[in-house]
Image (cartoon, rainbow, N blue to C red; front, side, top):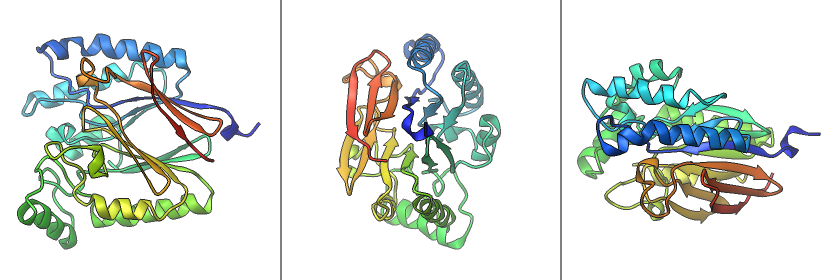
Length: 277
């Protein structure tokens, strides 16, 4: 049997915002332990963590990051990390080291699918631009547009890399799922939370590739959904907001029989979407 004919299940969680000493922070460990047990029972092969693991800044940030990283590491399988804006209260180079990442943008494959992880804080107030084009990009969004300082953009080198990855996936007939902390469409977030600064450019690029099936994001705690050019843009509700509607702490994604189903760890169905191999 072809591996892509076997259902793929993976866990997904975003916006944990771990902050010890608070009511929500004190419940984080028990909550994640429950999620891990649910993922084990569902047969999840790996976990996707979509960013904003921590909430505090300053000297406590690194300790908090290590603590919540180790909570997720209790899952008996790979944990795929996406960096969120709050994560980078720990400097990007140090964050990469602690999370075992060579780069904050990367790809991995499973069951004939290519997952493309984006670094939406590549050009931002917490990341030093690596070339003149990116310095101009930062000045434009930060100074001229005055976009939310806690968001960021995908820089020129990452855009070139993204094109290469999309071309490779097209040639190898791999469906693509994009993972991004920051939402890519205005209708899936609000003005206060914001979205990827150069979202229009990135979305236009993704929509040119017919094998891009979904983009899974976090950041906007209530969650959201939009459909454009055959792509499902899903913003997952935040772990930290699980007491609010829709009551979603974390979930399991199942891709099988032409569908992508996202269910909460409590068993309720959040999305049931067409997914064509």
